[in-house]
Image 1 (tube, rainbow, N blue to C red):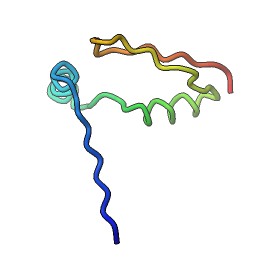
Image 2: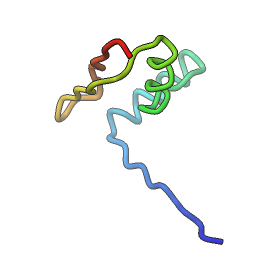
Image 3: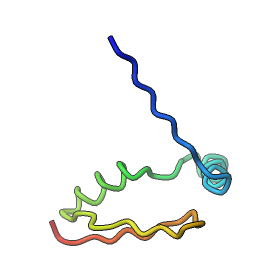
Length: 65
């Protein structure tokens, strides 16, 4: 049986936002997979996710499914 590992490298800013979300709201940020499920449940589909090169926020572009 093969074991597979996923290594996720996060920026300091992204990690800091995650810690703030957990501490202040008992929650975490949504992953791209979570966003796909949420958007698809509204009969939409993600066409593109726009992220600034050094930013920690993104814009999700959607269209009708």
